[in-house]
Image (cartoon, rainbow, N blue to C red; front, top):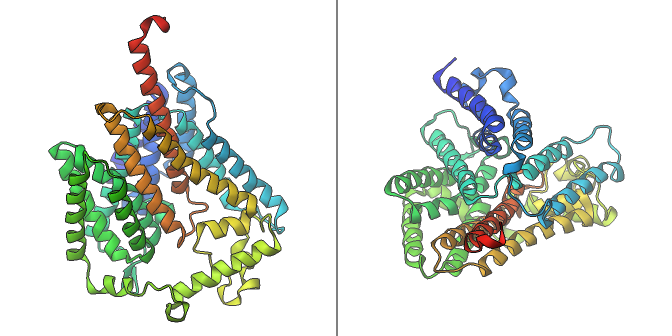
Length: 434
C-alpha cells in the first residue's frame, strides 16, 4: 500500500473513531472531505481496502453514534427549522413521484441517494451550531479545492474533449468538467474572504488555491460558469460593506488581470459563442433549448411529474433528437419529474436560504468583531448561492448532493448565530440563567 493510501486510511479511521469517542463533528468533517476529494478519483484510492470505499455509510453510522453518545453537547433551539422541513417534504415528493409518475420496473437510484443525503444533512444541521465548526466546514471545501486543482495542474492523466477539460477530479457529483466548475464557484467566495482576513500563511495558501482553481476553470471552458462569475462579481460589488470594499475591489482587479493573463485563445473563442439569438446558437446551446421545451411538454401532459428518473427515458417521445439526453437545467428537470409541487418546494428552499441570511444580517452589530465574521460569511454565502444558481440554468443539479449542502449552509450559520447570541445573553445576565 502506498503512502497516500495509508495516510487516507489512517485519517479516515481516526475520524470515524473521533466521531464516536470525542465529537461527532469530527466524523462530519471526515465525511465532507471524503465526499469532496473522493479517493476513487485518484490512482491511490484503489489501493485503499474495499470496505473503506463506502465512506458515506461508515461516516453516517459513526456520526449518528457520536450524536447519541454526546447528545448533551448538542446546541440547537428547535428540532426542525423551516429549511429542514422543506427538505423532508422535498424528499417525500420524490418518493411519491416513483408511484404516481410513469410506471417503471426499477426504483430510481436518485431517490435512494437523496434520502441518504437528507439524513446526513439533518445530522449536520444539528451539529454545525458553533461558528468554529462552521469554519471547519469552510476549510474542508477550500482544502479539497486545493487538492483537486493541484492534481489537475500537475497530472498528465486528465482527459480532454474538443480541447476542453472534460473530467473533474474529486467527488462523484462533479467528476465531469462543467460540474467541477460549478463546485469551484461555490467555494471561491470563501477563499476570497480568507485572503481578506487570514494570516500571511492563510493568504498564501488561499492564493495558491485560487491559482489552481482559475487554471482549471479556464481549461474547462464552461460558458455557464463564465456567466456565473460575471453575476458574482456584480453582486460582490453591490453587497460588499464599506469596511472591506477597497480590499475586495483590489482582489477582484487582481483576479481579473490574472484570469485574462491565463486565459488562452481557445477559452475566449468558446466564450464568444454565448448567444441569445437561436438562429446563431451552436448545437450544444440549441440542444439545451430543445431539452427545456421537452420538459415543458412533459409538464403539460403530467403536471404532477413523470416520476423521478423518467425524463431521460421518455424525452425521445417529445424531442426525438434528444433521446436519452438530459435537460441541462435543474429546475426544468425538477418540474418534469417531480411536478409543480416539487418545483415549488425547491424554489421555497432557495428563497428561504436567502431569507435566513437577510434576517441574520439585520441583527448584526457592525462594530462587533464577532458580527463582522458573520457578515463576511453571509456575503460569501450570498455570492456562492447566486453563482451556483446561475449554473443550475445550464446544468442539472436536481440530484446533486452539493446543491443541497449549499441550500442548508445558511441554516448552519443561523444556528451558529443563535448560539452566539445566547452565549452573549447568558454572559450579560447570569442571574437569569442560573
